[in-house]
Amino acid sequence: MFIITKIGRQKNNAERYNIYLNEKYAFAVDEGTLIQFGLTKGKVLEQFDIDEITYEDEIAKAFSKALHFLSFQMRSEYEVKKKLLDAGHGEAVVLEAVRKLERLGFLNDETYSKALLETKKKTASKGPRAIKQDLMKKGIDKKLQEQVLQTFTHEDQLQLALQLAEKEVRGGKGRTPAQIKQKIQDVLVRKGYSFTIVQEVLEQITIERQDEEWQHLIEEQGDKIWRKYAAKLQGSELHMKVKQTLYQKGFPIEIINSYINRKEYEE
Image (cartoon, rainbow, N blue to C red; front, side):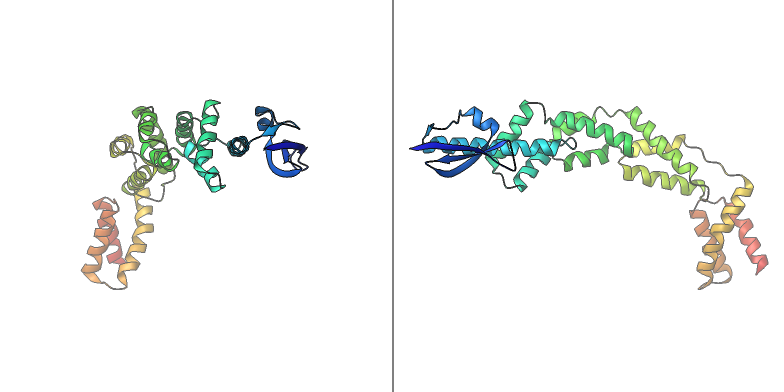
């Protein structure tokens, strides 16, 4: 049999209390646990009472720690569990704390997943595949992943993908239309858009170059290519290699021929 002989508020944490049994310090509890079990001076406790009180207090500490973690930003259940387990709380305690958070509305993977989807769309223009990877990293259930991603409509995907493509077009003044389209494809795939979306975007993007622009581009890129191969090739072999490389980069054949003829004349 144990008797509470003293209850003292902690100096460094006004919400926690030290419990003394039979004149000796026994354990500490927070204010909620103190009230829940009606702990007062003179109360008699059995060992099973103490075990229950300390277990509930451990849940309260985990719950408080999780609330602090959630105060900075929304988190998934997986993130909260990992945080509490890493902090040294037992699995049973963590589970109870998480269930309490869910009951009180502080933790909801569906709400979290929808918010993450919108954030990744607005701030990073990510496509479904990339967002699915983000959801997987947060430990979101596969069925919930699919449910949330279904709200990301084809029209929304196409609109965001077109915006990314237009950005590449604006910044592609030093590239051929083929190079720009290749860059657009690379960006969209990396951002997590499907091949279908990529193809639709490329079909809608029109990039034109005037003759003087082609001349400037081929002089800039062609001269670099020429210098690269001139170190090991010459004559017709050099001309053919340069011609092939420029063609692969999207230069029109007539522009390439004109450039090669000019280089031949200079030689």
